[in-house]
Length: 221
Length: 210
Image 1 (cartoon, rainbow over the protein chains, first blue to last red):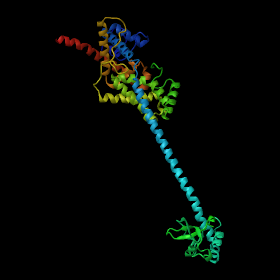
Image 2 (cartoon, rainbow over the protein chains, first blue to last red):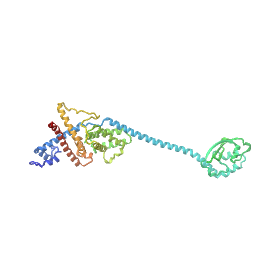
Image 3 (cartoon, chains in turn yellow, red):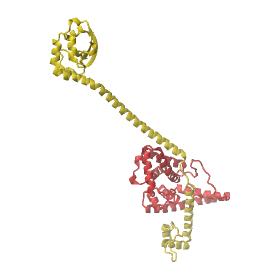
Image 4 (cartoon, rainbow over the protein chains, first blue to last red):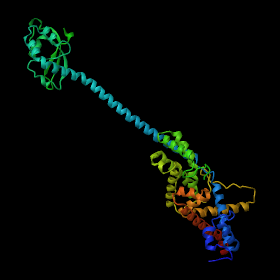
């Protein structure tokens, strides 16, 4: 360890705390370091080199102080940004579109099912309480055409004799033209005088393909 | 403090809020906001990467990586942990360290311009070619010495000497106590002096051997 005369800082202390200081800035520590440098040629030389280094580093910093990334980096990043967000947007649009399609399909199915179900329920609902009357009038009516038209009164089906009202699930409506006399095959009474007339009949076919109920549209007469 | 008047930590609150807002807009797909954010921060990140790696291509790659993180994972930034600038700086540091781990001994002595081309150091005045050559040689020595420092000392020297940050600002950027910055800087300078001394002595030894 080197200690010089009146200096309060030795070489080791100078190397630790004095070397990084700006000795011209003042302050008690700076004054002690400056005093040490004046009396120690070795530390003075070290201090000179340290000042030179800091100057060189600053100069090196200045050389690259205006440096910035080339414009191609910005272009690449913007391209990536665009691609990513466009993909996300189109993916979002596709999701929305698929949901809309699904909703539309659901609405379509619902709108086509509701009238049919309502029709089916009408048969069941109206026939259950009115079955005896309907069957009675069908069975008893001497003039089939007039009786049927009066019974159906619009879109309602009348059960074919022998069909149990509760078995009308999974049915299909078929419109056919036939001779009035053929209605006899369904168990209905037919007016012999009009047996050769062509009539239009809506048949409600069950799951087994057998007619369960019938309807004579107004236009058929 | 850097030229924009903002440290990598947090100084200018107005700018920080604005950076946050830009990042939010950018995350919603606003390309203009992303571009603004990039232009505001890229130079600082690029300079740090360039000074740490000594390679323009590496600095370019690092800048791209850093901002690609913002494009791909904007939610990675947590406003509670500091400014967007500090976040970007942290990401850049990680990338730099990874790069240095991969190529610990590889550094270029060339000074390149922003387009990656080799650039001659401009003469500040009309001195003799011999004088210019001497200046250039000294710069190259300093540059080599800085690039040969261990990463933790190198980044402290880069921040405090080349970027001219205060100890506090460097401590914020490096996420370490001020005392650590002081000691690393002291040690870094001592290493640099020793390396420069060695580099200065090499030509003399070589000529003595001839």
